[in-house]
Image (cartoon, rainbow, N blue to C red; front, side, top):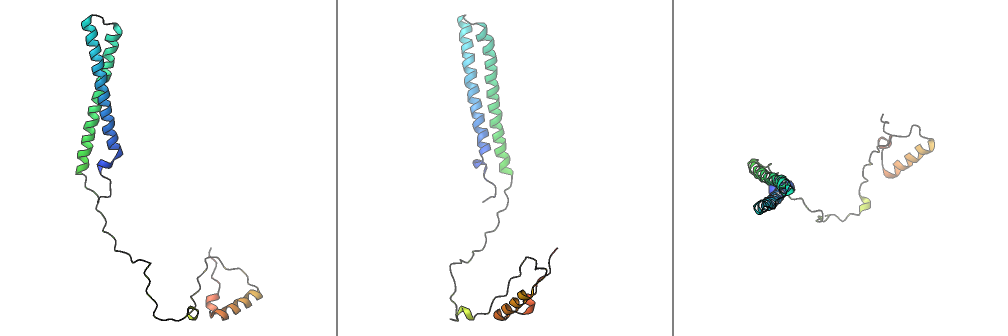
Length: 161
């Protein structure tokens, strides 16, 4: 499967074809109508200046529309033929199947979760307070002894500038 859509699915391409066909059909209808009206009026001898002179201009306009339709269809054919020569981009190899998160392997030990070792504290991105009071130091020491952390883990990080 190519990474680009096919030309058959291209909206501008089909717009060019539809516009060209509409222009060609409208020009043909206008051209035949005006030329037919002029021919019948001239052969009957009832032709007026408006039918003859204005009819000529309208017939020329119809011929221009027919020509634009033909040029548009030729352009669409050229785009289609050029597109067939353009190589498509290589498709990436499919990814390996991912294991589903729904399947969970059973735990071999039935140890309670509370007896598990505490997780390492996550370093905060916020800068440390500039000065610590005596109460906060005592609270930190009490918290460290309760959780089993060391002084190095509780030491404030250097503020970032």
